[in-house]
Amino acid sequence: MRGTRRARAFGIVGAALGLLAVTTLTSCRTAPSSIKVTTVLSGIGRPWDIAFSPGRSMFFTERAGKIRIRTTSGEVRTLAQPSDVVIAHEGGMLGIAIDPGFSQNRRIYTCFLSNAGGATDVRLVRWRVNNATTALGSRTDIVTGLPVNQDGSLGRHSGCRPRFGPDGLIWMGTGDAATGSVPQDPSSLGGKVLRVNTDGQGVAGNAKPPFDPRIYSYGHRNVQGIAFSPGGKAYSIEHGTDRDDEVNRLVAGANYGWDPRPPGGGAGYDESQPMTNLSKYPNARTPVWTSGNPTIAPSGGTFLKGDQWAGWNRALAMAVLKDKQLRILGFDQSGASVEQQWIPIKNRGRLRVAVQGPDGNLYLAVDDEPGTILKVTPTP
Image 1: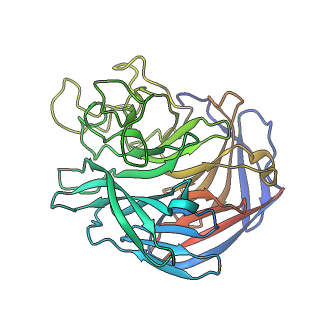
Image 2: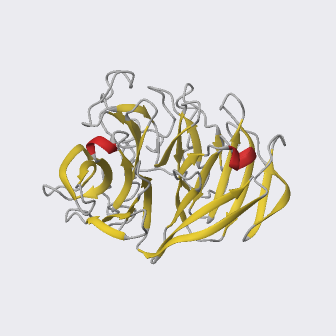
Image 3: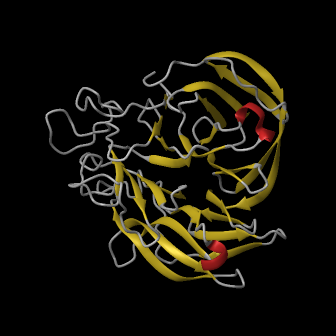
């Protein structure tokens, strides 16, 4: 496994509603003594992302096109269902983020596959929640033109999960649209991590020209999540081909080595190429974790915070689709390699995203029809 040593199973620990499988490299952390998994919402359509307002309301998206809210009283409302959302392949209504100044400006942001204006693209849209919290208005499309697949698989590799970083800026991973030239193209917003302000403009400290000023890093395949460690380091969670899903530590201007153009050049999308092609790009950044072969399809994740999580405090919690599990990665002090891994939840469905709520618990979207949102509560 590139970038980290291969984990080896060393035991299991009993946990509520199942067994807590543990793999370890250096056994230096202890898991919570148990976890409790409860259903918060059920009967919803393919939930894709979750975000919380300062008032503790839960906003969530459904891939079929809805932006919804669960209020603190438990009422579920549809705030918007934009008519230009295109549901195709992996595309639809995708990621959501809440503005850090929400209490004053009531802004939220969603990313989705759109046919606004006739052409189809992936875009990031800013909204204002009305004072009654019953609808969205003041729509402003702040980043448009993210590429879509032109070979008959519209919506494939859409990426698109925005997150506010500790710098107050919007970070967003994008997919390569399964198009060979996109990840290494400095003018394309696909196969990249973007970093923009709340008007969608590029900022100082991003990749230098000839790169589009909104691009932070490049050479990515299909970024499914962005997460920030308690120390403020940015990480991406990325889908591999038939091998090597990756977690990457993000560095401005860095190339992460994905280039699916066939050897010798020309059009095409060659998935036999390595996720991090060090032969072609010797200076490419290697991942801090890979799945090896086969892939597990990790999706949205977050770094856990709080003593209630015991040895998982400051660890990365990743929702996993294909292997239907929650995966916890414990990093070393430098944040450059994984010391320990746990699998605390299995077989609760395709987990699309993991988000820590303001109550300190972890919330998981189960991507199904009908889908659910689960709450994970630890006992330290």
